[in-house]
Image 1 (cartoon, rainbow, N blue to C red):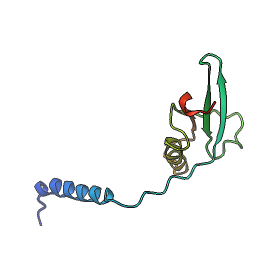
Image 2: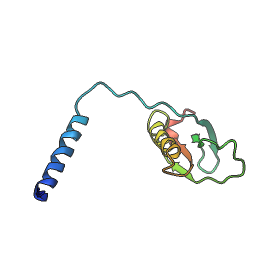
Image 3: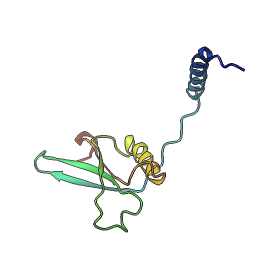
Image 4: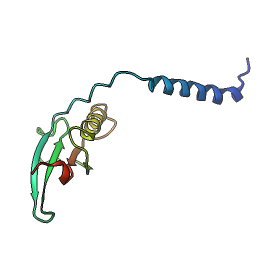
Length: 116
């Protein structure tokens, strides 16, 4: 039996298109991502003359590994109501699957988002 490769690419494109359309079908609002374990605090910046809310995620095992240096993923805007849960849940999953090495995630809200 001979395979006709000329049909493979259009068939794959059709399959991807229909699965994408099915995934975009209207549905009820998706459940929000849970907010992962993290620490939140406000810092005063004398240089910027403003307050900043900071959210910090540390990877599993961080507390039991004093002195270990970790890379940091800096997110310059977002917040608990926006990008922080999505990004940190993804980072946490990738760490647990051993796709990436453990990292900190640091996110700072813009001054307009922080109550004075």
